Length: 168
Image 1 (cartoon, rainbow, N blue to C red):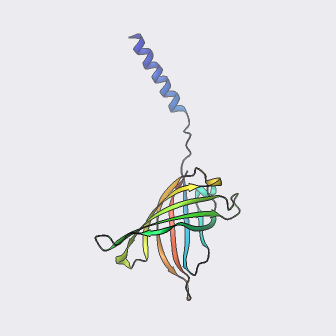
Image 2 (image 1 turned 90 degrees about the horizontal axis):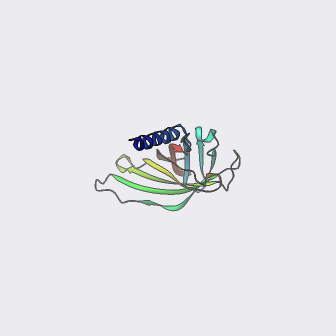
């Protein structure tokens, strides 16, 4: 009986110490990305970021984007209305905000396109896959939406995506 009481007391004391310790993982911070991709002609693709993750210095406020894997699109689904796509892009910070062009991160977007609406808008999920420099070890994910834009004539034609999520 005394031994059981001792073990119970030791376990209870260990639990109270663990509960009182602060969590070592930082709380995720909200972030929003506005991403502009041009199809033609091909000026530089850009992004702008805002939110608490930028204010806290976890993310830069703007930069450039390049696709690192060609876009992949599924054929029309059995319903003949939906298509799914995947876009993997590398983002590089503009100098400033304490970040430089060597600070990069990769985002994979999964797009869901409803062709019954003309195929000019989509919803998406995104995940931050990799990072270098200040973004090494950074994680994040979220969702968003996008649409085709025509800014001409002559065009540029492109896509505008809004990504909302959290980084940690």
